Length: 422
Ligand code: GDP
Ligand code: IMO
Ligand code: MG
Image 1 (cartoon, rainbow, N blue to C red):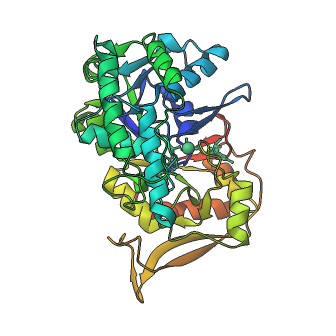
Image 2: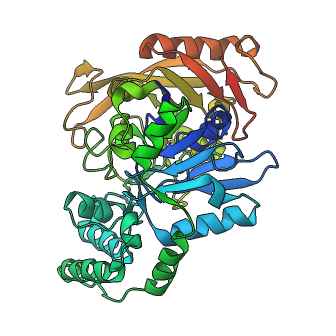
């Protein structure tokens, strides 16, 4: 049991990058198992420099840590190259610490065009996709048409690329007002050549070999469990399995290898893009959460929708993932609030429930709240549980009682050192 998992329990942006960065020292390998450049994981380094990682795992800054982009990931070579360049410019020896699975799928320029055309055709019902080509790339994967990293090594790669591109043109012609001109094809093909500098590996063999050698692996999730393609707020989801099960398929690791499942949740809740969000606040409080929490997307810069923490949703995602410990992030954002609320149940057609309804998209949900007194102080001097104000300790105790899982970490700022072990 050498594999631990870290993933988001809400709709993404829970602060996964920051917590992985903190924990990576304890691991030999950090591996991404799903998602692609729709992810934006923010790390603030010791020197205060901010980095947003999209495809590369958040262990890349540590000398002793190997980083694997697993087979369940979809890769846009252009974004990937930009990320590597930026890291190398900052002095990170990326090529020594990064490995890519041959089974990871490629995002083509035409996948992005299909993403944009599909979203535009949906009008007001659009998903609010990051438009990085994620959905169409995963469609080609499950439709058995996709191109994989390993294909780059085959002599007829360009032929395979042209064939898939032509297929995409056929699809694109079904949409109105869509140009068939590819904007950045040369850049994409150049980036494919660039990719060859990073070792391509059979990552399932590599990772299982590491397990046999007793090395410790951290599987880093992207997005959040409520965006899981099977169990999230479908169709307002991403196109991969963001939950623990995705670690097994995405990395080729057997379930019994998994030990700890660290679930990350903000002390409140955010969502970016369309779709249901029962505790969303449209008032001044929502505005304050956005402002104090700097809730703007790390990928698209869109303002994030904000609301109170949603316990029915957390109970659901804890169940789906087999969460063994929780990290609560962005607790400092609530420092100035007089009152803090937590949604303990949903009222649907007058009936109270803590189950996520199948028709969450259409259901009229009235959140039932419990209110807590705020702590109204700065947490900068809090290093241990005993240093925490009583009001915050009460709030955390309440969360643990409701969620039935221990809160082991409390993040009180974006920087690596602002993490309190409980
Ligand atoms: P991820 O996608 O889950 O890695 O999260 P993002 O990086 O997209 O968004 C989290 C944002 O909150 C980033 O800007 C982080 O720097 C910031 N952040 C992370 N943890 C904390 C925290 O405890 N307090 C505050 N104020 N900001 C945090
Ligand atoms: P990280 O890893 C927050 C959302 C998009 C959209 C939906 C589908 O940083 O937590 P897609 O591009 O996958 O077709 O978009 O999912 N989304 C995210 N929201 N954080 C993310 O990643 C997200 N990745 C996708 O906003 O609503
Ligand atoms: Mg993010």
